[in-house]
Image 1: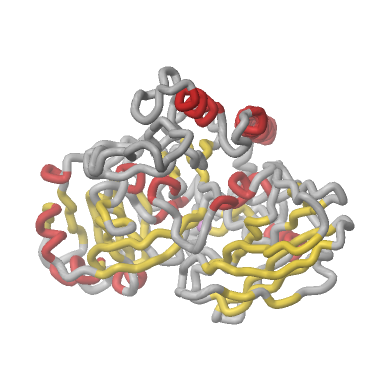
Image 2: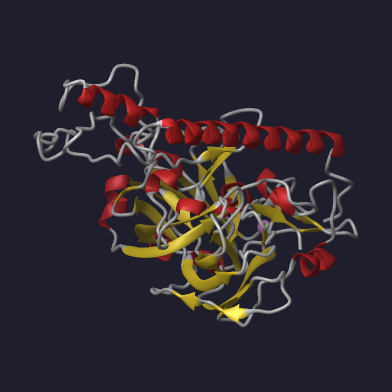
Length: 460
Ligand code: CO
């Protein structure tokens, strides 16, 4: 496919500047929160704790709600007794039967600075991640027409096109099929799009937060397609969402008959609205955009449909002006989450460097860490379970001598593919427009540790 400069350079530059400003405002708010925390007698949390502690000290004690204090998202604000052994705790099941996280935990998704909130995305705070599962409420989002609200009792999935018999399934029908569960990552192919030509966003949430892992439960797509019977000559399936953008992608039939499934569950409960409630197409290892949310239609065909999302978007413009199309697989990638951008190491000594690695082609088999900008590498420990097409946690013991250092991680997957250095990748892909070829940036990430312990995003 020949394209003619699809990027309005000036417009794109302005967009990126707006993103950088948005991140700066977000970080400034976090820094203010941190400063307030340090000003409290408890020195551990924010203003909320201070007020609650003050109320408790004034003899108000156990129960009254602190006026004006807001809990972080997903938490419920409760008074904090000065001595928790002297008052009864919160009554059992007082949460209505659905729990919340601690009011002292406030990590949240961050919305990228797009002009509208409906066509936008949020990023997972990877720097706070533990293990390999992303909490459902922190799973990254990408929406093109907002989050649609669907009554499952009225939702149907139509299978038609080049099939022997078109069928329409209710959610009850879909739940009657044999099910599978699979713990896997989804990564937006735009993850890192600001980072092609220069280090731009400051935190790992900004540079890498468009990847998340959940356990997904649903029905193998092959079962549904075989129920309808596929006609000879069929090669593609159009998947369509029921959102305001009517998101559509053409998917090769082979993938649909291989490991594709339709998920209605996420981390042991119904899939979240922002993840496609009541059903979402799952294509293990493929770019996030193909995992059509709010799935309502599958049309079997002999050719791809050339939708907006596979022509003007989600194609990769090369240096020679030719765009690669249908680049589905997310290649091996990794990132150090501790230490990472905006953190500050308190001083020389021992640190456990940790992060995540993943590959759309299978299992991670090796993870190397460099502390000298890629001159020397050493193997990190891969923490089990190491699952195919899934975030894999790695750990690496590091004795920091207090001198400036550059930390990097490099993943290898079971096909033998080694995560490229940035220069290796841009030598092949080129740097088109002000931000490179946008999608599929899977190069090694570099974090510089300065002598004062501050960590920044660099290109090394
Ligand atoms: Co692609």
